[in-house]
Length: 107
Image 1 (tube, one colour):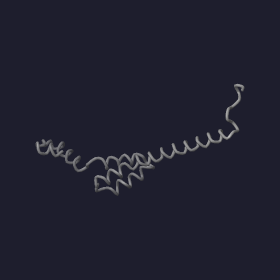
Image 2: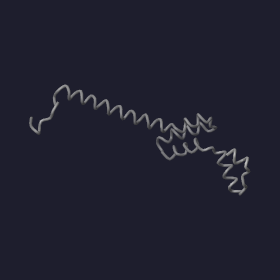
Image 3: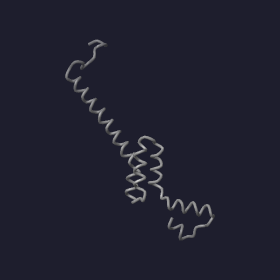
Image 4: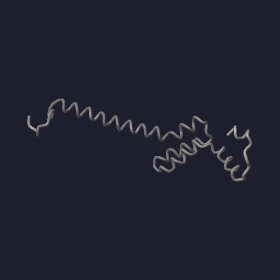
């Protein structure tokens, strides 16, 4: 056997190795696409679990986010941030009203 000869070339082992490599490649690409899909639908799943009032908006923003990715970020913010509490906190901060102990326990 010389240094230039290729083992398994032209044999059935070569064909089996090509088939195995093709299956691994297709499975890897499929798993990556499935993972991307599940990650991309994270805002919709979170909105469903919280019973969010704006689930339609979050769904539309998630679908548009496939094209414009910054829109998907808006969907994530809407799904994960409780806007009512955030607005109340911002209002209290703006007015400078201190929270009572009871309000701190609820937050």
